[in-house]
Each structure stands twice: as C-alpha cells, then as structure tokens.
Amino acid sequence: MTLAPSSTDNLPPYGKVYLVGAGPGDPGLFTLKGKGLLEGADVVVHDALVSAPILAMINPQAEVINAGKRQGRHSMLQPDITRLLIEKATDHAVVVRLKGGDPFVFGRGGEEMAGLVAAGIAVEVVPGITAGVAVPAYAGIPVTHRDNSSSVAFVTGHESAGKYRPQVNWRALAQGVETLVIYMGIRNLDTITTELLAADLSPDTPVALIRWGTHPQQETLLGTLSTITAQVAATGFEAPAIAVIGQVVQWQAQFQHCRPQPLGWES
Image (cartoon, rainbow, N blue to C red; front, side, top):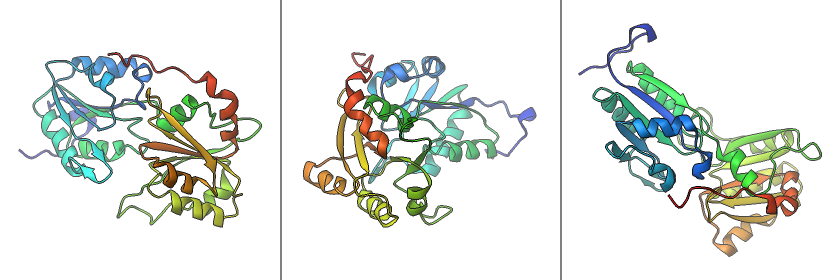
C-alpha cells in the first residue's frame, strides 16, 4: 500500500499518532493528557528512558513496542521507527509514540512528525516537561536567577553524523549566555570543557552533573570547568545525565534541601 501526502482537510481514514512527552522520569510530572492517551491507546511505541511507573499506565490491551535507543545500543533505527508508526496508524485508531522529556527538545519529534505528515497520517504533539528545566530544579539549581543569570541555552552534547552543521559553536555560547544546560554531554565532556575554557570562560565556573534526574536514585556531581572531567573519571560518573554550567550552580548548596520528592514510584 502506497501512502501519499494529503492536505489536513483530506486525510485518509487512518488512525492518529500522538507524539507524547513522558517528561524526565518522575510520574508525578507526566501530563494528564498523556496519561489519558496511554490509557486509551491501541499501540504504544516507547523510548528506553521512559520510567516504569509511566509505562504501567498503558492500556493492558495495547500493543507495546520498545524502540529505545541508548548510547551504542540502538534497538531500532530512526527511519524504521517512523515507518513503524505509519504502519501501525494504518491499522489502529490511537497510536502513541511515547518519548522521554519533550518530543521537540532533542527528542527527534520533528523528524517523526515530518515523516508522518508526508505519509498523510494525522499526528499531534503532546508536550512533556523537558529534563533541562526539571532536572536542575530537582537538584536545587534554578537555570535563571536575577543575581546570576538572565540567559540560558539548552544544547545537545551529542550530535548526529550528517546534520545540518558540523558542530555546536561552544566558544560563541561561552560568551553569549550565562547558563548552559547540556543534554547528553557526558561522553564529550572533555571536548566541551576544553572549548569553553579556550573561549576564556573562567576555570572556576561552577559545573553540576545530575544523573537520573527526578528519579529516586538521582545523584549530583559538583565541580568546576577545570576539574569536572577528572572528577568524572575518578568517580565513574555515567550517563544519563544533564550538565549545568554557570554561576547558578552555586545555589545548589542553599536549595538542595528544598528539592521535590519523586512521586508514584511504588506503582
């Protein structure tokens, strides 16, 4: 069967795909709209980092497919995931693509939506809370503060091959914003810190690495731009983690006892 593009006024009688953001992990941060879609889904295609309590919300009669991608271990390639969503939407009314964080923040939601629209499949995005905001908050770090930071940039530390530009301009970012929040930056942390230091960012700039943010096992490693790489090597600190670079990290000592408590993990 060949699927041809169509206008939104003349969509073929297929099902609908919902690109749903699961948030950073804590089921208490999952949206009510997302929960309702999971409970009524016919098919759910989910990422590796979606937490178990959120997966437990899925309709027991639904077909559940793990399409998770972890560093060095890809269960499905991205084009295959898009083709799978198209295939499932031709046979089922409600197909949920459940993605960690927010689908449109380093979640490849834009790529999947483009493929679905091109195939004439109805698609809707349901935003989720992105880790770049929630994870620092759970560690007691505000990403902006009137005394320290009036600007923040969210950046990926792990870029795909063949993308539209060769690399993030770390040197420009070092001079352009006061807080950097880096997703997937552990593997390339040495390169990132070297570039930031070369851009004359102070070696004493505070850095926080937050692992398994919003999960019960969340842990934080604090250092500076000049020390954090050695600290990671010494402690064996690993992904998945968010990096926060900037003076706002200093608030962690004062705010860490105010961190929210993850809810619903007993489910």
